[in-house]
Length: 296
Ligand code: MN
Image 1 (cartoon, rainbow, N blue to C red):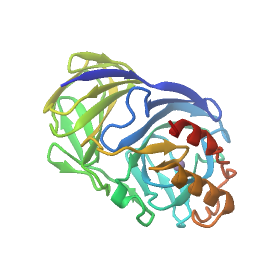
Image 2 (image 1 turned 60 degrees about the vertical axis):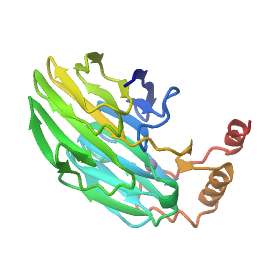
Image 3 (image 1 turned 60 degrees about the horizontal axis):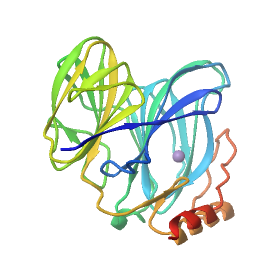
């Protein structure tokens, strides 16, 4: 039952939003089918200075947005226009292709904290039709001083509503003060726990914001002990068992697939149009860089 300690990469996006990117990590690309994990904020912003991500395409993955503080508007090429509030999840299944945009309210100051994750679709589902779902309420458990929100999959007998295509789990753990709980895990899964706010001991290892502890398969419980207010994100799943390429906003299996998706984004067509987004469409990087990396 190996344990690895990983550190996220820090970056500042937009008008000073600090992002901590835990996945993909140089030392670990995926945890189950989870292949991307950003923790953004918490941050305050002035009117007109919030998050503004213009239209951009995705293939081969699901985007999973867990809103912790503040609100964001999602718009996409299927015509969905959905505000997401704290405690809610937006799940967009890109499949063969979709485009979307995300933005904060334009005209008011605000506060913002979000976990943005991607779930790789298995090969046999990677070309499915795109879809979007908003989940306004999620199962919540109280355990040993933790308020536990089941974001995805099944945890402690509760099943989250999000439609996923591989066995996986996602759980938010938040405490207002000292808390201690023994969590039951699926031993077929590998798991990761990321510190979002405050510090806690996880299986005896100290975990601070931005750090990620990885637990290999074979573990059926995890003791989490927080001396004070804390927030943690637990993700896990059956090891993916297939090689994926992650490039720009795409998950695929070959250079040709990425190249075609890039051309289709430049040309329009496959990814549709996002109506009513404030941001400018994002420009794709040149996939030639990927060919250089992918060719031995
Ligand atoms: Mn996106």
